[in-house]
Amino acid sequence: MIRILIVEDQYFARLALRTVIDGREDMTIVAETQSGFESVRLYRQHKPDVVIMDLRLPGMSGFDAIRAIRDSDETARIVVLSNYEGSEDVHRALEAGAVAYLTKDASAEELVQAIESAMRGKRYLPPALARLLGQRHPADELTARELEVVELLAQGMSNQDIGTTLGIAEKTVRIHMTHIFEKLGVNDRTQAVITAVQRGLVHLK
Image (tube, rainbow, N blue to C red; front, side):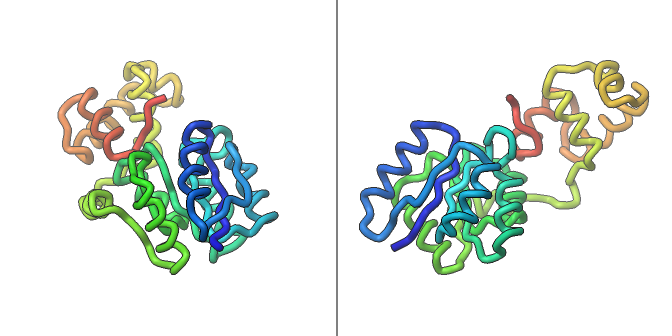
């Protein structure tokens, strides 16, 4: 019997997961939560075989929850099920310690396959996500400051507003913008935001 912890803040998503898992004779849900913080406590309490983890959670993100769980148990098997589908999201989740990654439009059969692969200690990525991850270019990664600039840019801020928010000169913001455009292979602010969102570098609220 595969014992599963569900970490998901959307009620209907949890209901869908329960429907799939309850329909299996070889799987059972030992606990579920809407909170990343609570997921760490519940993992330590129940020691489930597999955790199904969303990434967008209130308080503690799924990325941080994965790290915290893996810090407490490096053998933890975590399957990500998320709306985030950028190459950077997949990379960050796997780097944090997840062994499988699915988007929320995955079929019940794919979910079961990911859980069974996780139990065998094998990584599971659907072909489309594997190709996306293969197209990722680490050399093009933005610095922490550049990510802050893009996040504020995605909020519609001007260069002056970004400079004020970050406590840097507007000229410095323009320099960051030049580097961001070069790294993302774009020519303007709108393309920069679109590309950053597509790659999972930033997420629109």
